[in-house]
Image 1: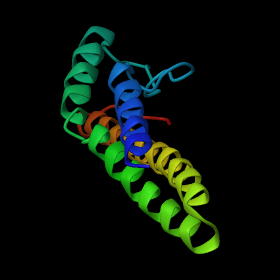
Image 2: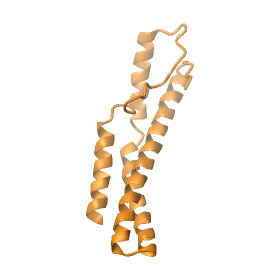
Image 3: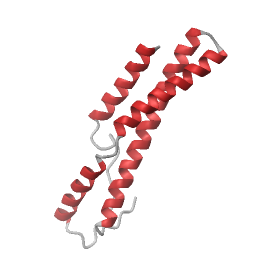
Image 4: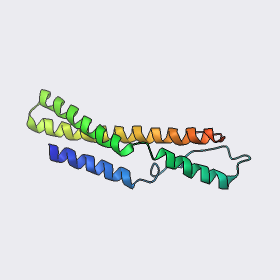
Length: 125
C-alpha cells in the first residue's frame, strides 16, 4: 500500500510540476483591455505570476494524496479486508491529490487576479 501511495504522490507531483499555468484550455486572467498598455500588462502579469508561484501547489498535492490514502485505507479496512483497504487507499490518494492540486491552482489564480487588480487592471474572470 505504501509503495502505491508513494507512486501516486510522485506521479501527481510530477504532472503538476510539468504544467505551465493551468493546462489545456486555460487562457489566464481576462482583463478589460480598453486603455491598457499591453506591454506594461505583460510585464505586470509576469510579475504577478512570479508572486503566485509562492503558493505551495505541489505541497497541497502531496498532503491531499497522503490524507486521501489514509482515509481511503481506513474506510477500506472497516468495510473489507486488506485488498479492499489497498484499493480504497489508492483511490483516496488520487482523489486527495486532485483536490489538493485544484485547491492550490485556484489559490494561485486568486493571487494573480488580486495582484492585477491591485495594479489597476479590471479583471473580468
